[in-house]
Image 1: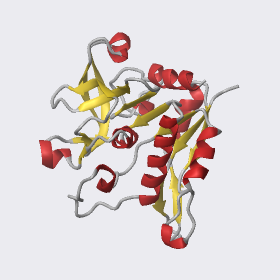
Image 2: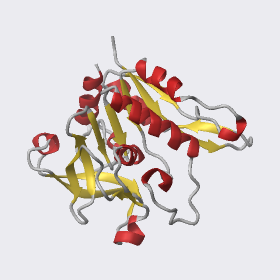
Image 3: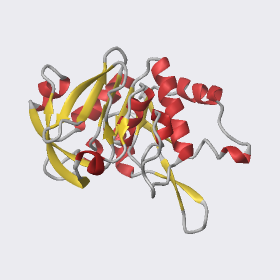
Image 4: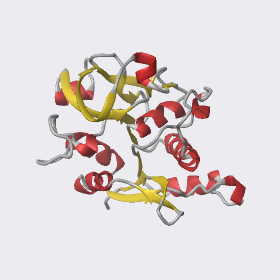
Length: 243
């Protein structure tokens, strides 16, 4: 049987004054292409003032029925999750998504089930592992990684990335936050060549991995992002772990 993989989505207001669940299709398409069955989850932890929200037991039951978790890209994670005061004046956080993804990630890790994090999801894994984030890399480090910008990363010696893609390769980015203090149990696997920012990691004991860039946009003969290597092998590796 094909593995069932939970794929997280965000929420955003719609023109009809109702929140809608939102996810780019290339996330589910890359899972399907590599042999998994994506099951999209999002908007499930409702605002606490409504009196309706998923319990941790509900989340454990959901995790128990799935084979893997794919934490996707999206907006910033609220700094309360990594013990910092908010340094941004205009950022609006998706509190329901933060709560759902934080608990899902923690439960999957406790169950020792595979987790993949991309961009925001990469940062969420780090936060769950008690790491911290730079809230704005442009202000903190003078670095800008706008939508679909290509830049080189350097793979850690002996890492899966070095074995498959070589010691240096190009990736895409779209983020203004990044890993600062690496979380417990995580081992850096690739770094931004210019700044040294951690761009990929693996958990030392658990089937947990993540990247700061967007591999789902770098797959196939006509990828959304041009210029880097095909990242299908990375997604396949994750889906295979879930099988």
